[in-house]
Image (cartoon, rainbow, N blue to C red; front, top):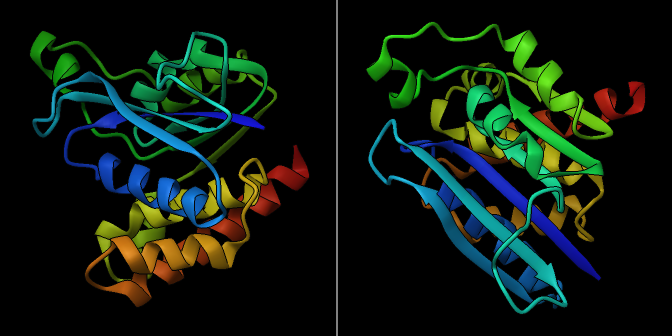
Length: 199
């Protein structure tokens, strides 16, 4: 078994924490995991991408067209890496924009989110788009947005783990507001199941 996950976003979104939770989930299920930050700047607002490879793998590098899951924590950054997706992949995209430094520095307009999602859809079989920021606001903790995204990843069924396994990893990595993060995970999971069922 081999699974390639590519996460794209901007600095300050908690990309490293999200990758740790996914890695911990896989490790708890006895899978081999390799994680590497592959691009970008760690500074807030800079473009950041992380690759996660699970299973029978020996390198952290994910080639273009070979990602099984693209996780876009920011829609423009997700579209930037849409060519990483394989044809039968799934993309989980947070539709809440954060203006990346690359856009604000050039003072160019931010593209419509719908057009970004369309670009991603041309590269894979399924796109699960949800506003993780709105979900996190519903649970009363804006920093729980990534837990909603994690719920959507779990709902995809691509990772051989149950929701309880992801929740155990959340408890092991996240240090505060655990209940809000678990609630955000559940909301993202249920929302994604509905979207996947409609695809």
